Figure 1: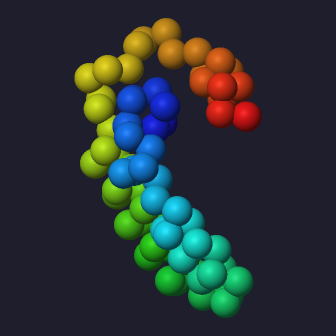
Figure 2: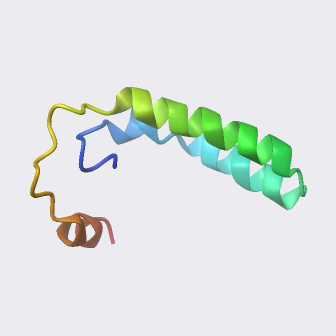
Length: 67
């Protein structure tokens, strides 16, 4: 979604949130992991530019460019 809607990756997908989610999962704290994940998704949602997506978004090409 970040690539489809031209969101700045640095702002929307912060590495510290990924680390915190993984740490909560490793600690078997599902409630904390879910809380952090919701915050993370909220950051992503607010960084999306929903007016820029093409109706013909080629998800295969988008995911291939990330790999």
